[in-house]
Image (cartoon, rainbow, N blue to C red; front, side):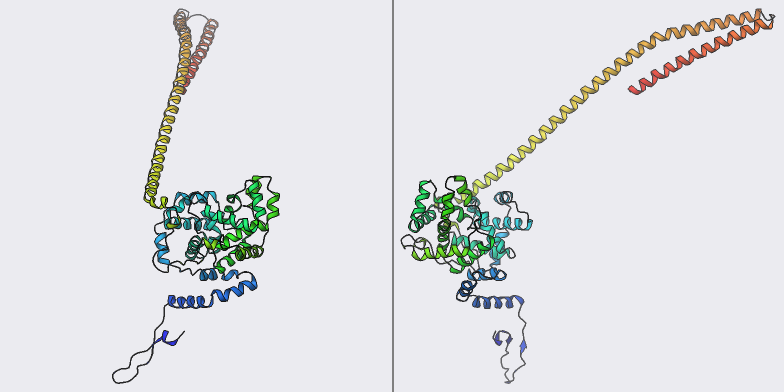
Length: 461
């Protein structure tokens, strides 16, 4: 760094004397920008390619720095913030989290946020069902820097996914046709076998493209593959790798031709293949395939860079015209669908409340019916007890009345026989005591019966 960038000089005063130099401290952001510029000068393709050729891959510690430098990712914070500020959790992102259950919640949240930003950038991507599987491995490579991760995905979509959305929502028929033509020239026997068994490029090529070959390669081998694809800066080389994969595993494919399910699973299952072997065949195809069917004849072979300022470049042009022309109608239909969903939710809530109220009313009705039935049974029981009481009551009254008559007559006889001897008096007294005991016992029985009836009536209340 030159000293004039650090120290500012003061102009000569009229008297011709120089004032002492005054040091101005730069901001941290200025220093970081200088470091970035220095790294970009050092990490150019001419310096990096010998390293890649010598070691076969980039150091894991510096991979994100190297990729972002080669692709010239601008770290455009303003454009990124403009997208994230408009983010509303779309149903597509929510469905993605359900279909891709990730144990790590931070990764799931990062994936959902990135998808939401992509939908703000290009709303038509909401119909792209393979988007999560395509972007997830790139996202995990740059997961420590969401801004650069997002820009890496934009760069991949713009440069390495050219013509993928021409027939959206159908597969990219032109791209698959190019791959088929390459295979026809490179290995006509294998293509003929595919045709005989009804296997099209939708089965042997499209699954590999949808995942950027991340499902058929191990994590380390996939990173090595993309070290080379990004360093060579040739989007057409990805198509060559798809053809090379089929050629390299030709014998394995032929052994699975009896079952269509096995073929389908084969292109979604990790295989034991090295990225080095795959790239060797792909680079050979890239050099030997005739210009007439070479992808460079149909695709842009120069990488487009993202803007350092202002919004990110538009992606709408990749879609068919009938979709882009009716984008406003699509947004209107989207709003109508959202309103319909809200209406259905309200209707479902009201129906739930209605059913709950009816259930409660029915339960109360049953409860009241049961209470009435119990009260009726208790009333019948009380009536039976009252009948028994009325039956026993006359006998008790009669016994009591007889006792009073006997007592009165006994008193009269005592007055007349006052002069009788003691033996007769003792007999009368003993008889009176016996009668009194009988009366008390009867009275106790009656009182006990009254208490039992009263207690039973109290229990019913």
